[in-house]
Image 1 (tube, rainbow, N blue to C red):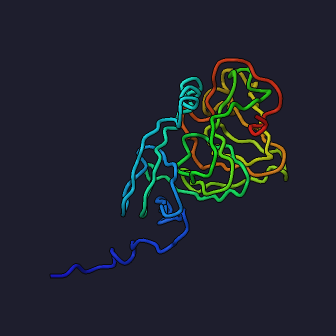
Image 2 (cartoon, rainbow, N blue to C red):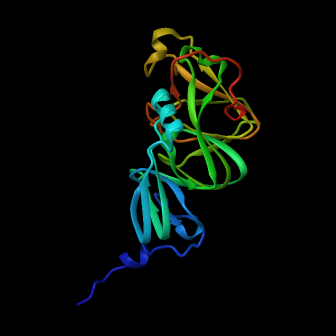
Image 3 (cartoon, rainbow, N blue to C red):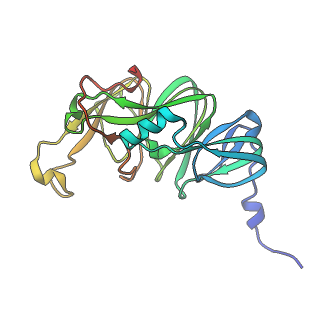
Length: 241
């Protein structure tokens, strides 16, 4: 008896020994020998070896309170042990980043996994134009280590230093440290609030130095860049505190 065909050769596990690597465009491979990692709850699709999973919700009481207040839900599980872990999220494409003493601001729905050496928090973005929303929130990832995020389709990385840059709030995935964000609200009236009108009601305007990552789909979810009650003021800079 034999099985014929290229299935088991074409999709053989990759041999990378990096902590984070792509098994394919939609599947992340994590080498657990480098230490514990944080991964989105429910993102494990397979593992080999001895790996333990501890669901810590939003990562501690402080973050749980922030999550409840802001609506920016980031339920994470702590993964530790030895072996290889494979993670994915609804067949979205996976993008791997290595931060070296740097920081990014990410939509919570797009966070897949990151090294335990990365500090994370839910931060309020102070944006002058956000008065109508009362405030916006994102996930801050800071430090040195790997980060894996998901996008629906292949994204575009826009250099905001080259020209004024704007993005639909439901398509912006992340931006890097050094980028400032403000909110532009359409003045087109009621027609602006529906497709086919005069334009988008709510846009993100970016400046400074760095990159904005935008996916080709307006589907980051209602929790993305979540609005909450209260007042805000000043030009948006997530990393200012």
